[in-house]
Length: 131
Image (cartoon, rainbow, N blue to C red):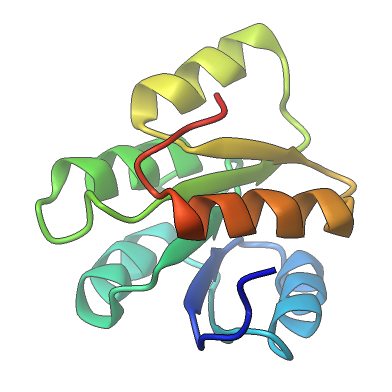
């Protein structure tokens, strides 16, 4: 794993339980920013410049697809790989994730070995994609 360097990871999820679960799993290895609101996350990503974003799809207000599109169309954040974390893994949603500029999908419930492998790949090769 590439945790020898201090990477900043942003987690965006409106579900407090999911935020806490991911924060606990990642905070011992990474500098973690946890945000429950999509619009606030867009502004924070511009300021904080995380190396990787984990993003839920189903959120009130601005959903994960819109957050991803906003980040990928902004020159200040377009370089950040975005991994969707969602139970939505059907072809329509996979197509939307790809169109929005997503890097990969981790399905819920989260398999942390798979999550860490995809995160490591995204940190090493942020311009790639598994979608």
